Each structure stands twice: as C-alpha cells, then as structure tokens.
Length: 213
Image (cartoon, rainbow, N blue to C red; front, side, top):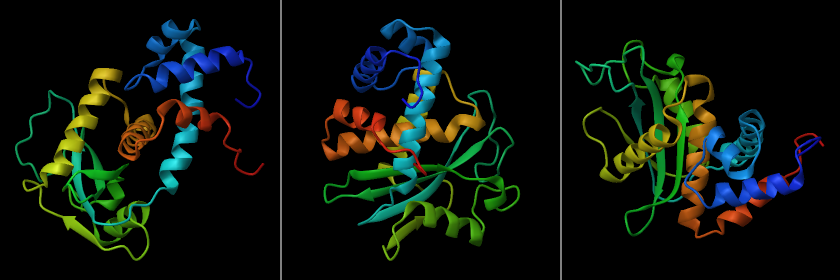
C-alpha cells in the first residue's frame, strides 16, 4: 500500500473479498468493493507482487515429486503429446507429498523455451537443474517424472485444478502475467494445506517490508 491513494477501507474490503473467494478478476473485485476496474487491477497487481516474494522464496522439502505439464488453448489439436507446439506454455509441477498421499506444499513454475529440448516438452540438463533449483530445497531428495503420458495422479489433479482455476476465474491468462497467477494459486493452495487463516495471510501481504527499504 506504499504511496497508495486508495482509501485503506477499500484495501480492507479487498482483503475480505479475496480471502473469502477462490480468486477474483479485476472486474469482480471492482464490483465487490466499489472501485473502478483500473484501481482493482492495480490492487491485484500489488497483492500478487507480494505473493511472488513469498512463493519464489518457498522451496519444497520432504518427499518431493516433480514433472512437466503444458497449458494450451482448447482449440489446439495435439497430434504428438511429447512435441512442443507453439501455443503451449510448459510448466513444472512440484509437490511435497505427505503421508496421506496428498500435497502438503505445491509449486508451479513456467518453464522457458530455452530450458526445453528444441521441439519437445522435455527439459535440457541445464533446464532441469534450473527447475529443481527454483522448486526444491538444497539437499532434499526428489523424484522426477519424465515422459509425457505417465504422470502421478496427485500431481495431475493439481495441474487440472490450476488449469480449471485459470479458465473459470480469469478466462485464461497470457504468457506475460502467467507466473503471477500461478503464484497466487499456489499461495492459496498452500495456505489451505497449512490450515492457515486466509484473511490473516492476505492482511500480512500488506505489511511486508519493501525490498531494499
């Protein structure tokens, strides 16, 4: 909220609305708290910037499983599943799997084309190292699920849920902002897995110190 001209009461209302929902687009938030869509969009960007700091610093521990999936338009015709088609955005899906077999923490990262084998949805050796460095805590054992058809049911369920969330809540997201929305999804999912108070967690986003201040 640094240098904001939006009344604090509107920020409090935004926290209530966001913490009580699975996600809101700018139009929905604007209607919920009585501001313009432009102001709501700015507020959401500030929230997601704070979420990004949290999710980028989060590294998975325990029984970690990692694999790749692809987000693609519904209209695309996939002839060879392992090939990388231009409209597809490849993401790494990483999860700490608890004793019950359910994820206790989740991390989803967009994978750059430069980290993939040209023409295929498979990471290069350096690309895999980057995926693991961003997702898994140092020294933690991990299991890589290569190949495109075989994928653990637990990870697949997470991927299907985030894909559904992006489409139903935001009508799909372009590549430029995709990672910030993936961060928000993981932030929400991880809060639920931890049993944390959603409102308190969203409130804490507003009081995080600025980097360099």
